[in-house]
Length: 251
Image 1 (cartoon, helix red, strand yellow):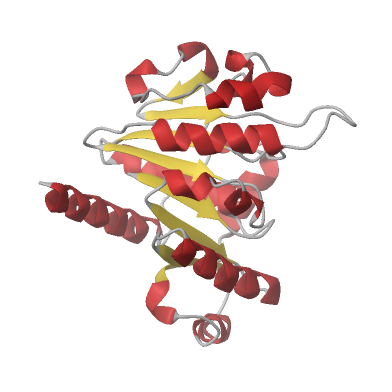
Image 2 (cartoon, helix red, strand yellow):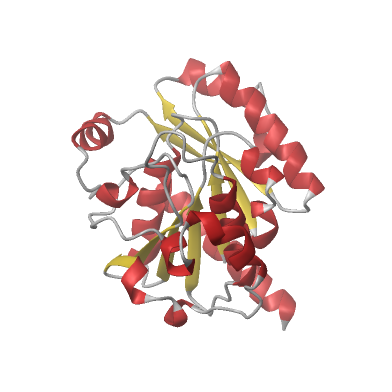
């Protein structure tokens, strides 16, 4: 099952990706984490890994990515991924699409094109999950990244910008015929929770994650997340149930 995590900048996408990946792996699933955010430089730390080499270099680098992605037609499985571009720990592997390193080197469009094509041709087996961390906002919709995934999870923090963006993503998810669910993050009190529930479609909310000082300090220090967090197990339960239902429907 392919899961895409999206939302506004600073809402906690990478935190949820790391925590969810660890929970899914703890359940003996194989998990591939895709880092498709060209400006995120710390996801590997949250997973307790070394940063892998950029996957775009496997194809010859950013300058030739547009042409190379057009040539990607055959299906890939997790076992076929080039090990030199993977970091791993336990049942989790991390693949980083590419980053922006230098002033004036151009936009991230080729990296997004690679993400879109790779998600489309990756073929997962039973008990295998992909969790993709995206760049902030909705540009990845313009690049068609969502057509290669099964489900969209939108992280909503206590801000009006986050609420508005979640509604827009729900519209775009409908256009690409992908289910969209909401996860509240860093909720400090009941008043905040109720305000958010009254601001969006509450039927799409699958988890409410409270403000957590331990997570905050771990993220501040750039150290690995090793903790149980309220809401994460509930998300994993739902995703496994959705996957099982999809498998039964195809038989």
